[in-house]
Length: 228
Image 1 (cartoon, one colour):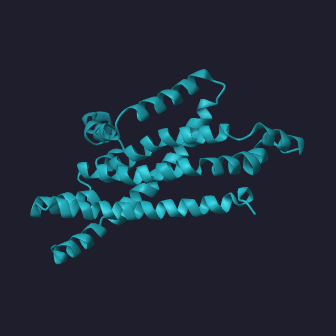
Image 2: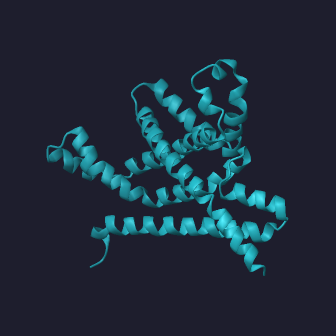
């Protein structure tokens, strides 16, 4: 075992962790915001808006994230109108293309999590809130959202972990995240086993921290369900 090589590789891969974490956090935040809008559209009284939202979810859940990322990074530049617009300084950069692809994909999955969580709220709780005189927004803020949040925590944890792993795809559009740095080291040293095992260990560590953090939040929010 080449300990000096493993040590140097580990510290080199660590330099890609900030980009991985940044893309994960920003894509989850933007995806959650877009997902809330999609859920609202799906429950709109206008059928056309609901159809558009459902079609969006179907397309982005049904096609590979890598294909979506390639279409945004390589495909958008083929439209002259877009190259002449104010968006081009952002969309010509791989970072913003990667973030856009991750956020759009995340929105589709998160919208289904939110929709399922809201539907899981017992109708008795809603009726009890109405009986207490709560208005629509107050009912949503004090009963529906907290209950849906507790119900959706396991699914949210899975989605966060999936997003951490999905960021590895940004290395295909020249971004140097953990996987991108690992690929460069392998290209220089041809020692793929050690390098990718080290990269996998870093991803496992990140996801282990996420799993424990969500478990702790779930433990705190569900204290009323625990046995005495």
